[in-house]
Amino acid sequence: MNAQAGDALPLIMDVDTGIDDMIALLIAATAPELNLRGVTCVAGNVEIQHVARNTGKVLRMVGRGDVPVSIGASRPLQRRLRTAQDTHGPTGTGYVELRGEDRRLGTTEYTAIPASRYIAAHINRHPGEMTVLALGPLTNLASAALNGTDLATGLRDCIWMGGTLEERGNTTETGEWNACVDPEAVEACLSRGVLRRIFPLDATQDVIFTMADLEALPETYLAGVVRDAIRFYVGFHQKVDHIDGAYLHDPVALIGSLLRPDLVTDSVALPLACDTSADPARAGSLLRTDGRAPVSAAVAIDADGMKAELLGRLARAVSAEHS
View 1 (cartoon, rainbow, N blue to C red):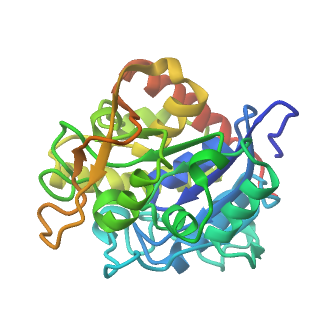
View 2 (tube, rainbow, N blue to C red):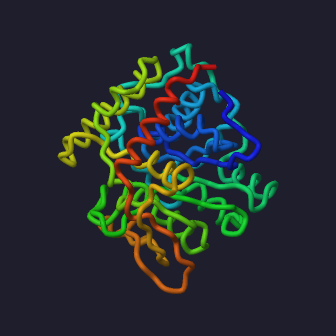
């Protein structure tokens, strides 16, 4: 399925494909409003080899093997890589593992251009046209910026799912996972005005998805893959957050930023910095600062509307034929 139209929004997604990235990719790859020009991979939820394989397989599942996949940073700018296998499973997709022996998923051709250069090339070729949606640590975007790519003026928009403002963090008391994995990358992007909009936990945790919500999905092979992945995610949240469901941060950010922005019911504009101290309890915390362009942060979501929109789009995605 090639869900591209002449007036569709040109988009690059930057992902560390775990469970919620997988759902976001399925929706974006089958959304007629989006022209998915490429997907760049960054280590985060799992190691880069798992991210790259998961990303390629997910795109193949919905017949989007035409979308280039670029492999990016295998570790943060300065810190040792930490992963979240307890949250996303040993290879990033919960109880299902998207390995090569599943012939129905085919193989993926990866572009030889590394992610930071891939993003830079698109900006240079199409200045002011591309939107980047970053759903993991910001290492690839920071690398591009640090190597001289003017993301602030070269992109049409740059959106990040990450950080937390008032909500308790999911990694430290004040830190969200994507920010805590590579705080230096977040600070590099904020200090250079790269990020225009963010979807912190304050917004993405407004919606809880349960296994019962997934019962409405059609009975397809792909729906089974999705259920097996999210079932692992729900189990983690039951144990850690004591909720009978899971937060699907990344697809909520995708829908709220690009597909149904009307579902964002409140946002604030703040000049932000990211704590890069050696103290692990503080590093990755977003701080209000002065002298920087404000970033628009979504802080409230229409939960019922978002749930209905996400499940409807996911149902269409898992009905797509494999290539």
